Length: 378
Image (cartoon, rainbow, N blue to C red):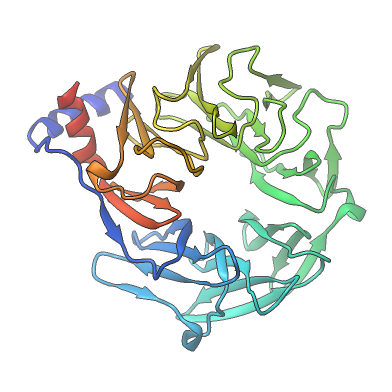
């Protein structure tokens, strides 16, 4: 079925232009786009911030765009997480320079913002993830534990409840209803009201990212440790390292492409890093100069089998973005209109617009035009 879809898509591509793709810059009021979310009506929402306590939220649809302000009821804060719940409400999280040790949580519903300030830590409880593991219940991962809302009340999970660490980086609800939690001190499982730790298992010691693949396997990687990447197959954990074929033992981003191949990215410093593909048990590692940079902070698999790869470190390379398709890497930078090579994240919307967020601007390019160009080039 997948082969038929791709073949039909290729026929359509042949009728379109294969001119060089060009990025256009999208206005962000000088802020960095840290997060993206898309509503059912294809409206793209952006969480914007400066990383120091200032920022806003904006959205764009087929007709208009809007930037919210304090006059709309949205506090000035550096917003770094955004999520659209099952009921269509938009949630954003960040922190404000005017409210130390406090996470700012804002919800947009019925054309109005409502705001909650969460204060429970001696340090700024940075918002790392907003998700909805159970219908109608929002969970927020912060550096002050997990906050959860059901109806109008807020509760909190901390180390006293069984979390391995108050610094929570990621939350994943898997297909069978278990909730996986990644912390600075490892991974744990929330199942039937209890936290289950894996202290004695062969799993990475610090977890920045958790990912579930199409088989139901759960992957865990740590951006700031040197342990590799771990996978839980439903029975036991197993960890892979550079000795097995990883490009780098630090893993801060994980994805699966259209063909079921797993991808891992990370870096130790500006001279050591890369991305790795795992396909049918075989590792293939890719590093600079085959890809644009040593650092890999984000990986995104598109609907037509390609994988986008970017990194945020300042490096000598002028091509900040890498694109893998049909077994070949392609690089994009200033020549294509991508005016900054320090990439924060990549997002592709339902209209095939590729959004590339950098530390100095947000850039958009068309997926189909990009594929046409590189397919014709090769």
